Length: 351
Image (cartoon, rainbow, N blue to C red; front, side, top):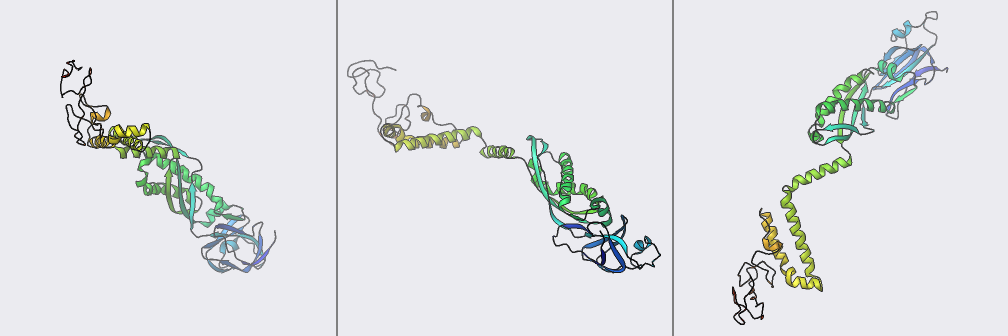
C-alpha cells in the first residue's frame, strides 16, 4: 500500500485501544519535514524495514535530521535527506487501563482442611499500563494494524488464574478463613504477576480479588453447619420442638367438632397448660413431667383441666376441681379414699 503522509496523527475514540499502526497495512511515504503529532498519554514508535528506530513522546514533532537521528542513520544520503522514505508509525496508548476483569472459566479444585475437596470460583479486577512501548509492540502487537484490550483479556486471565492457584495452595488452609485474607492474597498474587506483565512491556498497576466462592451445594453445607452451631444442645432443642408441636396439635383439636370436640373436653382442654409446663421444664434443663408422657405412678389426670394428679389427691393442684372418688368394682358404690374393701358389699378391691 502506498501513501504519502505529511501529517501523522491518530486519536482513539473507543478508550480500549492499546496500539494502532499507521498505515494499518504496508508502509507509507513520509518526507523529511512532515509533522508527527503525538497526543497526551501516547507514544509513537517509528519502524522502517521491520525495525523499531525511534520512540517519540507526546507533542508535535517535525521530522528532521536533528530529532530523528536513529531514523536518519538508517537512510541513504544520495538525496541529502530530502526525498521521501517509507516507514510505519505505531501509536501506543500510555494511559492506565482500569477495571479489567478476570475470573475462572471453570471451578478450580482446592483441598480444604475442614470441608475436604471443594471447587472454587474466583473473580476480580486489575489495572495496567504500557511501560515500554517498543518492547510491547515487538513482543505482542507484531504486524497487527490495531490492538485493543480485548486481545489481552484471555491471555492475562489464564496467567492470573495460574498464579492464584499457586498462592491459594501455599497460603490458605480453609475457605472459612477467606474474609480476613483477601488483601493479603491479592498482594501475593500481584507480586508474582509483576514479572509476567513486565516481560511484555506492561506494568501491573493494581490487582484485586473481589470474591472466591464455592458452588451452591457447598454453601448449603456451610449454612447447615452454621444452623447447628446456633441450635447448641441438639437433644434439648429436639425436646422443645416436639413439645411445641404437641401443643399446637392440642390447640387445633380444641376448635374441632365430633371426636375432636370430645377430646377438647377431656385431654385437649388442659393439654396446652400441660405442654407449657413440659416446655418450661425442658428449657430449664430438666425432663418433661411424667404426667405429660402417660401419667405418674399411682396418679391420674384431672377430668376438668387434664392436669396431672399426685397420688391420693382429693383436689386438682392445677384448677382446684374436686377429684372424683373411686367406685367399687363389684357393686359400683363410692369408696372412701384408700379403702381396700367396699363398705356397701364387702367386696375386696383390686390393687
